[in-house]
Image (cartoon, rainbow, N blue to C red; front, side, top):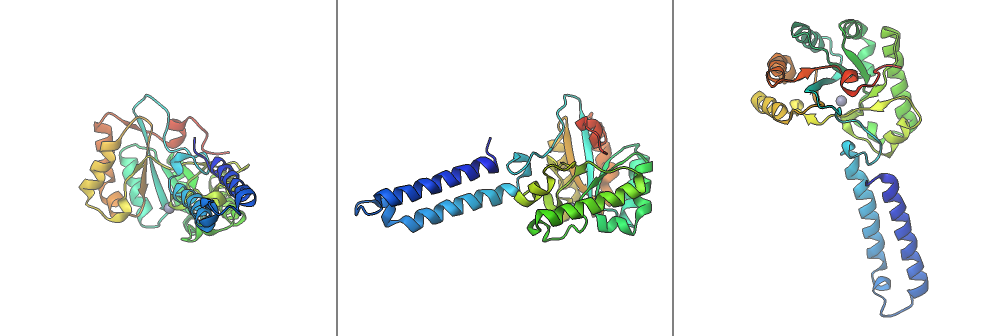
Length: 266
Ligand SMILES: [Zn+2]
């Protein structure tokens, strides 16, 4: 399996080999490497950093860190996850729809949103939904933060959730689904299990709701994890229809811990 550690090892071995080659054969006038040394080094660096950068946007490859993107089951179970809440106007609508359909979901909440809307976290918890950590700031610069700053954000959000529910979340969803070396370092030796998804609805892009619905329903498989957001028009207006579509296809919607067979809280 291609991992950051292996690619880094390969990078340094290649770098060392190039240096040794340069030292021992560098003076040869017919040496192709000597003539194009800078080009070789540049290509090596571009390849290494290019692979690391691209793979950060593909968390399900487990390149930088082991990330769960779906459940392993033969049963027709799927989990619906909502990111970026809570929102004082939009989240209650989502909770009402879930209640109407007797469906339990997972909410990956942003710490700074929790601070002013604790009652929504309380309601989620009391109604049997799971709450996961989705950083404190969800800053657009989050992926450039140091691992220490990231970890501080995650702990702050944990504390807020624990203050309301009495439990510390174990599921963490990286902002923007990016898992780079700093995120991986922040997660290392800590209690969080990063969870992404294998069905991306693209509900934030404001597409035609029919297209979003079809995109989700077409990809349903046992163990699917669906990514939605509390605040999007699709979630607000078509969540009920989506739940019916999933159930009509023979799938049961369960909270993430049931599908992954893992505890949601410490
Ligand atoms: Zn998010």
